[in-house]
Image (cartoon, rainbow, N blue to C red; front, side, top):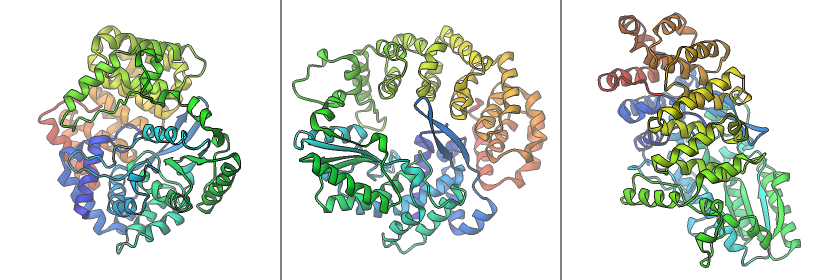
Length: 534
């Protein structure tokens, strides 16, 4: 892959799928599609003057807590968009060499993030999924009586930069890409010598390289196993052999600066593994009508590829399959629990999108009840993403209920929106309809919350609502805003008539290259679409 191909594929991938699966996509996603030549030109400039550019335009990242279940969190980073693009492009330039070092996909051993780039669709990975990994484990459990189930503790945050750089250097490349990647790690992790940013494809590719020595050693020792990211299933003929495998795996991980998650590592009989995986244990004799709705739901593949030559037929087939399952009933049973099954609930939330519009209302309204949101706290951001994707198709009654529920969360100072990631996704829905009560809430929120993740969304919402009285006040503080807020305000300026036009004429020569790309993109967009992207 040439640098130009990597730059274009990185831009296309971000345009199609966003920068991470954790944070809301930044404004920069749109120019990646509409101004790709400008984006590639900026990446070429970074590539030519890497160290100088890094010194003059250092990455300004967003850090936030991402919920894990009801009481746990992980630290997530949204990388400065232009640097995220360059980071992804660098990794794409070494990804083919990384894939060549891995256990071949045909051996059905390592299932996560197999590099199979498609420049047309901008997909980077093949079709193997976590479900395929689980099915393979169940299949192997019919051959081996004992299974070691293991999980790497805090995998992404503990990946050693030094060891990863060594693995990159062992690829035998003649470029300085490995050293550039390590330099970016240092910037992203605030000079710590370990940790990968979570959620984006570049880190996923590098994480696979980090575990490749472990995979290779297990494979050379002819120890039967399968892996998906940080989850291992290792198979044995006896308890003693399983303990030996456990000790060996622990040693291999220790050599990489990693360790096992004690609470998730256990030795099971093959039957215990299958009993714990009934939703995925396919057999030819299964009669779908005899399975509980949850099992039928979990056995559905809800992945839909709009680029497939049979896309229309695939979507109709998916809708038919989903319509035969009582999604509202599944959600009601989960909501009635004190602790939900997050996998089932997430699958049900995704499935709502495939329901016919006349059947969505009941499911959406069940999710919108305040007591439901408390119970569904681990999937709050998933719910908000669902609402945003369906918003234009919701009836006025449901939109009224959504507004009432969201305003209630602010009035009650709910713990759900004390988490910035939850709040950011809520704002995507909150900003769709204007009211004076909502404006009052947002003005206070902007003053109280210092996170660029939240403040940039508020600027875009106030722009969408035409709140120029508030935007004019922010204009005078432009130099004090974060880079993320500045891009949002550049968009806002195009909605401020002469005041915005004169300000843009005055400021454009001082903007950074990536800010200028956003400015040029939005200027052209305004000729066709007046709607603020939110």
